[in-house]
Length: 173
Image 1 (spheres, rainbow, N blue to C red):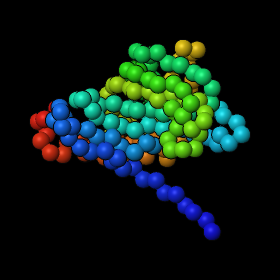
Image 2 (cartoon, one colour):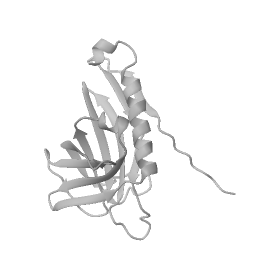
Image 3 (tube, one colour):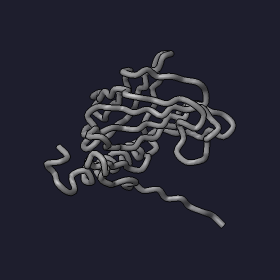
């Protein structure tokens, strides 16, 4: 018997914060770079989701590194699109430790980073991202993004954008 796990882009959270009356929205995590890590860990497992909370649009990035790596607040994560244009995001906050870079239970014992990125998320609407560069305290790491993964990220962004526009549009500007 075989089991096939199909994961589609979806809105995981969509609610109004009772205290601030601001809309809170998060998409599902979409893997943008990956390779098998059973037995060895190369640090190429990266997933992102789009979120809105406290009036801020953000990307939450989970990077399963397998070893201790650190980023700094205000450091950069740069996406490269299909036309070789760069799209820069700023690290606003991060957590580093075992299980921080994983989505789900697989890899919970491996080292990773959870990074909150601020910048112009709308670049994901009309562009296919082909690579990402993550600046760390030890230099930078470049990762390719497969076209199929980039398409999933783009679809997730479009869902996110549609969801935040629901309701009182003036309130979410």
